[in-house]
Image 1 (tube, rainbow, N blue to C red):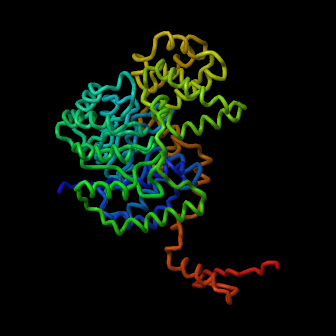
Image 2: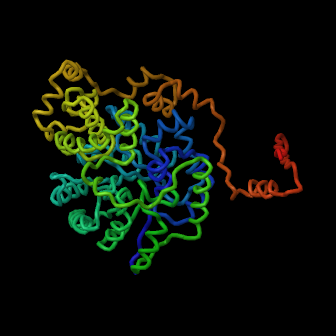
Length: 487
């Protein structure tokens, strides 16, 4: 019986896809040890986008999050998923290396490495930085649909990635665009050119086909799959580990997951979702339009909100239709952050203005200049690129010098005596937000009914002849009183 390994992405892609990264560290900690015992091949817990979310919105220390998880997860490798650090700007190599040094020092052992263009030069630079820090790199080969993204394209990308001798490769389908039919041609192509390096399978459920594609990928020879635990599975997230295990078992495959560990984890996050009003992932209906415009689900929500603010929400279908043309004009970039944002925002501007590229954002100008990947310069339609750059703002941005700075030079600007963690935070985030984060109390476990004390208080609260519950310990007293309701 062939065995399949599972990588869990609940604490990273699950809540990034469904809860907009609103899961706090305290929500993660109560299930950390159970996740560790479950037998996953790795636990994906972090990405660079979480840094800003933690500090600015959750008021949490992102490095403390990793440390606290690492203290409770001692047997399963902790992993993150990373492209660049500054998603809408330019990374300084010194700061990128510092990021990986800090990740390894705090407990990260593996990483999936991405580049929005599947550019081997960027793969090499990013994988080398991770490897230099002692973190095992897994190269994401990102799936997309366009006249460029053929089997021959993916055969060559697989060869290029394999030459970098990564720990593993990963067929990454962030848009959930794979179909079973395409999986049956793509997986054998990649296996034939991977030089024996193991390939993971990572596909979202955006179009409802992720679980089916996962089963076909295993049947065709892949033995490592990425899944999530409900309620943070399905929808825009990844397939449910329960569903995939059940179907693989029916097809004769085995695994090392301790299935008894998983239901309490699902119950914990379901309670949080119900209390906090967070979405609960559910299977979605097949939507062919997703394959046409390829705008990610989360970005469709943002576009709708932006159009609503200017009284043009009814123009959303036109903006999605325009995104097809803009993507072709831009050289068929893969619709992942930040490239998908450039395509979608420009499509909305074109629709609102009534003329293509009459108005453009600075980010689109920088895209045309190659700041977000030199492939854009070669692949954009020349007449479109010329129209975008032939304006005063285009010439102004083209003249801006972007020197490569040393760590010492960056320290002189941000703080000579601060820690490496503080330096990285100041490079990415405003001092005011960092100060507000530092002022918050230490992280506490998020208590649900599974906590014995919480369960006891809940039971006592339901007693009809009790009007007060009091919990006392040295230095602490909690009193809960029932109030009489009006007749």
